[in-house]
Structures are given as structure tokens and as C-alpha cells.
Length: 122
Image (tube, rainbow, N blue to C red; front, side):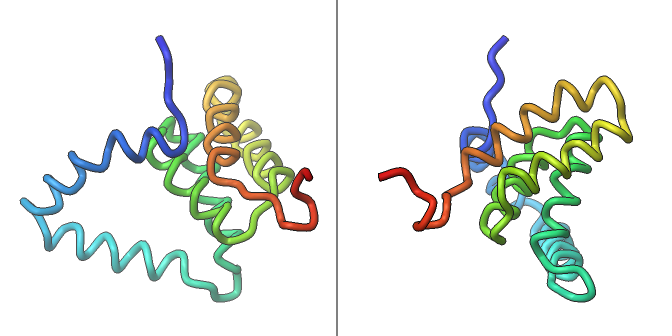
């Protein structure tokens, strides 16, 4: 069985998510408010919160969660090393399943990661 990661997971879920959102808009509006409240920078910055959410996606074995928060972490400026270390904590906490979903999370992160211009290959 082939698993998709990152962008493909989100593309696959997109039409179904839009359909469900149209049927239950209030639920999605409430979730969007919770999402914004939880990930807005406070004592912890957004990057840290996105890395935490990605690691929790590993523990929950949720490819959609992993993809969404890998994208968020990359957009918030996380590095591959930071993503890997967050995944390492997930592996600590969940054991064996983390060693399966952890590589998926790193693949998803790398799908969204763009190296800084001064580090990009020529």
C-alpha cells in the first residue's frame, strides 16, 4: 500500500472537507476559532505550537493532522532539524507507532519546507 504525505493528503481531503463544511458550517466555524486561538502566538510562538501539533498528529496516527501542521510549521519557519526533534518527542511518547508515523511526518514537513534563500542549492 502506498501512503501519500504532505500536499497530496491535503489535496485528497480538500473536496470532502469543503462538502462537509458546507453541510455543517457552524461546527467548522467553531473549530476555526479554536484553531486560531490555539495557534496564535502567545507565551509560545506559532512555530512551536505547530511543531507540537504535528508531533501530536504522529501520536494520533492522523495523516491529515500531520500534513496540516507540517505545512503550518514550515510556514512558521521551522527547520528540518526542529521538525525531526519534535517527531523524536512523539516517538518517545508513543513508541513503535511513532516510528511509522514519524517518517511520514518528516516527509510531509519536507514537502512544504523551503530552505532560506542563503541556504538554497545553486
